[in-house]
Length: 248
Image (cartoon, one colour):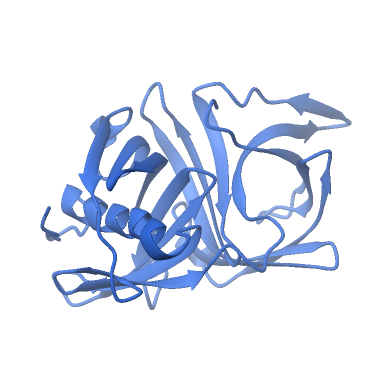
């Protein structure tokens, strides 16, 4: 078994990744791993770091941030496949080591006692993919520019992905070709009466946005998510997001 090791930075380690991936696949043995999971650790100065992992549609993202302040720590994610007790995963983004992007690794997994236990680390479930209407992995496919809707090629290396469980969301902008990471944000969300509301728990570009809430209109049309309202800067937006497939 791969041992979990958390160094000073809490991020520059594959041990932490392995712990998360054990969680993901372990659910296949007794319950679905779809949804969101969390754990907490302390860094070298005693600050509590909150970790949230979202698994949806064959994709995974994990983000960490300071529990009290929401100060962003790091993120990684990509696609994964579990089979015969082994998980194979491919990095699409990794803030702590961009050279991991494009690489594929595999680990064994185990699950017991209803939670994932690796040494003294325990992950607990936040939700199982419900109750939000937008659970899934999405890629932006259209964006209004002026009066014209511009198509965005979802298969290009430069991607903007949103991954949602039933209560948690994270968006990530990155490039799989250059291995560049542009930014991310996330937190909790609700979908009620045609309104999609985000409550920001972390934002890599601006910690001052933590705690803010943004409300948008949303609808599902022909399988696509139509999203409109005002951005965090107060700019009108209209976006179309398409469900992600393993080929994109």
